[in-house]
Image 1 (cartoon, rainbow, N blue to C red):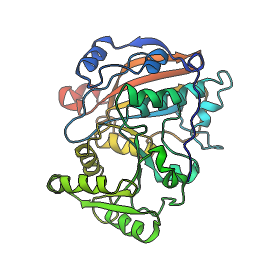
Image 2: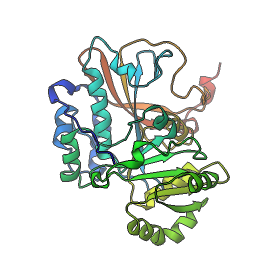
Image 3: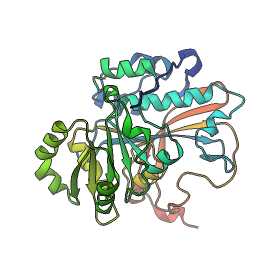
Length: 338
């Protein structure tokens, strides 16, 4: 069984210098936040970081991506996402700061959504907290478990590499892993997944979850080493709405989305609350951009308000953006038609 890799993130190498804050909104968020204090290292490197309370029907959701200056997620000749940050030759430590920011968001998260494709392309990928200081502060300051849950999402489970290291982490590391899929996906898991697992569902209504909640909780408590398989939706189509509701009833209040396609899916369904976008000041060109397969219309589209902006030296920009939906109901659309 594998041990989780930990590393040092020297504060002087990853510090993000603030240059803009939406003070009024940040004060409101802080006043409403269930977190009463920012972990010391996050306060030192980034500044205060608070999140609003989770709504009752789903966790509060956010994601983190690094883009090139022209908005690309990857180079076409080397499509691994981290290369956009890593190959910024003007600021070699910028990639470390970008990865540290992801670790900071993991520190607040109860669960992390991971795409099956990520496991296919990154054979050692686990979404645990790499920063030793943050792992300690997560427990001591925020009162959370050592690491957030890793939740692997898939339509039908046929693209999940079940031999991946994520399913074979030493139990002493306390990294809980789950699978979220459709009823057809559950059938494939049953036939193909050798590790011990338990099925939760299938559910296609919130009422079914409410009725079974105590049973679900007891099943998870009684099987701490087994991989839960959350089954939602119909046929080969899982329901993100029902999955998020199930997670919220299981006390997941903060959910970090590390699957680019799932980010866009949640935006399409008006269920992504914040976008942390880090810009590496390189130009990539090509077509590998967020949401290129799910365009929004020029009338109906999400908006973002900048909460904070900071820099790492002169070659990385770090932004925190609050997302808004359904703004067309409050504007005169005739002014925006051509």
